Length: 312
Image (cartoon, rainbow, N blue to C red; front, side):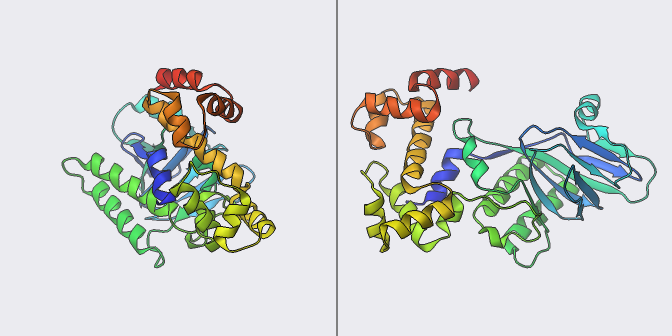
């Protein structure tokens, strides 16, 4: 069992382009609200600044790919001094085609923008995986595979053909998977935003990773901290301390969280019997599962199913 593959299957990432991109020249700026979305953009041509309140501005250059969780408002601009346009109003006024900003022809800049969408049942899992902002220079020698994807995206955007949007979206999704499966130390030129602990950090640790893989391989087993520590060949206290330091929560809390993630996906997908879900993830009765689910999620399984049906 591959925990990373488990995660991708639950998140079901997909990309959506925001319009057909943006062309700018001269002095220009575009401000974005704090919506908590995971946005991406890459520069096909030119350069610009990424500006966030209380943070140092970040210089972006041709070919850079940026993942940004919009927990703070931010601005893309030619310089700090420009008064930016509101992105929501600008996109609404444009309606179709590429957004045009600035005046004149000096310092031309072209970029593509979009956001990642995830399964609504478990999109909260993503908050543990990435810093709020990651910049990937497309020409970084450390990231050959990702560089190839970014080069293909740039080429497709510059010279579009039949089904270009479909191709770009698939390439963007593959780029996200490549980024997610890199260890944090492999992400060059990050901002000062600290990387989060979580599943990916745990998989990179030889002791914690073995425990996580064992949990995913047999999630219904009655795991204990002692059993996991023996499996990993370390003492109980050393294992518990190390797991919490790397993942951010204790091993049994992680087990419970993963069980609830599987349960939410099963409920969202329409598994008909609560008993089936309960037994598949390690509960001996539907009532025991319902109690644990309500405590963890904040509502009983039946209400979660109803709300998922309405939102889906």
